[in-house]
Image 1: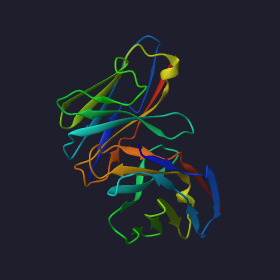
Image 2: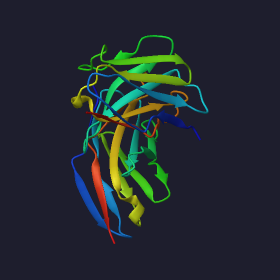
Image 3: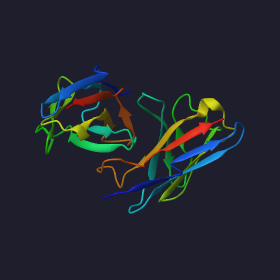
Length: 115
Length: 115
């Protein structure tokens, strides 16, 4: 079974600075998807960024980018120019490319933005 | 974009009663939907996979007779918590995707409180 580990329960960053959230995963599959979801206090799950395992290029969405290291099974999220609205729980998630489409989530990292 | 609607957003019920939660895909058809449960300050744990026209697949440790899932159409899945107890109080979230290559979209969640 696949597992996802987020080793940072909490992180904080100054507004406008850059922060990196860590995520590692374990799988025997070669084809899969990785995601970062944001969950603000409203508890709505918001997709931040997605990476296909077969793509070597790291995904980027505006201020959000990932560092995907397939051999190391690492998938970190970098948030540049942090804004107060970025404060939330961030979940790393894994999804097989075949078979069940279910998401397996990490434990989450609570990100605080200091003004 | 794909929208998943979940209803109700919060519900309070008495111990021993049953509660039904609806999850609808508003602008796409979903043959598969997923039900997650989230305790305070914890991650999302998959409860079951809802399959249109067939029985749901439950994760290990989830009582299928207590958490009844019905997926009668391509746009609607329901989760019924039967004979609810205070320990069933939690945040329940559904998700669905248009197809295997699309990311999962989440409903806004249902906060269940059993008194």
